[in-house]
Every structure is written in structure tokens, then in C-alpha cells.
Length: 111
Image (cartoon, rainbow, N blue to C red; front, side, top):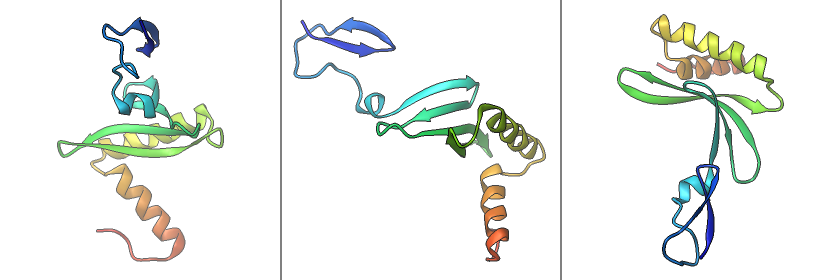
């Protein structure tokens, strides 16, 4: 019987296969939830990225807050709170981030 890791506990696969039946996305990406919709995403190569998942006009969106360890948990929470304030004001945090980057470079803003 083969063993595989599923939901952070060891489970047995019922039918012997070359690999355990774990969806490929589960093998490739790990999320460590800090707050509902706010998590640390760990890529297979080991890079870590703070993300905020939110809904705007009925669509689910994700905002990349920054990379760990360059952005600490306290700084990531501060940026999350700022993004949530923008959401409550009716602004899209992703668009505001892009516009802020463009203002810094001096290029035209996104409509």
C-alpha cells in the first residue's frame, strides 16, 4: 500500500498507483491562512508571497501584498488593512496599486 500526504495528515490510497491521487494544484501550491482571505502562498520553489483574496463587483480577485521575508507579518497586516479601507470606499485595491506604481514611474494611469 502506498502512502501519500493529504490535508497535512498521512492517509493510505485505496488502489496502488505510481502516485497518490492528489490534485496537481495541491502538490504545486501551499497556502497558510492568517486571516479569512489573507494568506501566505508558498510556491513549489520555496518562494513565499503575502496575498489578499477579495471580491469586487461579484468577481473574486487576489492582491499580491509582498514577498516574505522582505515584508513582515505586521507590515503585511498594515497593507491588508489599507486595502480593506479602499474596498470599503468602493476602490479596487489592485487598480490602486497599479496606479500608484505608474504615478511613481510617470506613465499614464489605468482607467
